[in-house]
Length: 192
DNA sequence: ATAGGGTTAATG
DNA sequence: CATTAACCCTAT
Image 1 (tube, rainbow, N blue to C red):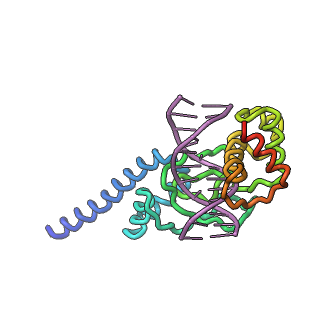
Image 2 (cartoon, rainbow, N blue to C red; image 1 turned 60 degrees about the horizontal axis):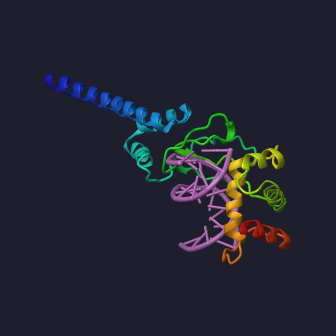
Image 3 (cartoon, rainbow, N blue to C red; image 1 turned 90 degrees about the vertical axis):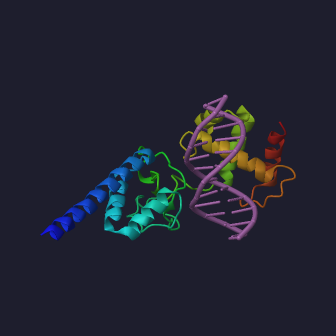
């Protein structure tokens, strides 16, 4: 009689503990600003058992391993070499406005856009910079990359990489072959 | 909005 | 596995 009561109590306690864990987890996720769908999957995993729960905790603490894959978040448009899901080491802001490429704070399939610059684009960038000068990225975006996927920040970053790669004396091995004249222009602009 | 430090996918 | 290039974060 009494034993049964105790077991019942323990069982209830366990269930309550699960609830507490999930509550804590949900709170943590507030900071991560994960998408609801992903949080749901994680809660399911927490419920599944200690192994899955450990997985979740490893990820929260920034330790991997890669979890069981969620259904792919991106819709296949712009498909590229099978992106691997992994944990993100730090919380990211979920940008729900950029739908298919939305970054999941804990797990994400891909960056929004990982497309490599073409020589043509670089040429255009250099044209723009020689017209407006270094640092006028929004102006450059508006005038030279109006419809392009490249954002003003992208332009800035690309210019930085160009400097690193092609500036006089750089020992870097470059992945994009540029015309000598273009490299020349980059070096000229870099000098200023 | 930009500069500059950091992270990480992709490449060799 | 080391490096490069694309992208992210954030103080100013």
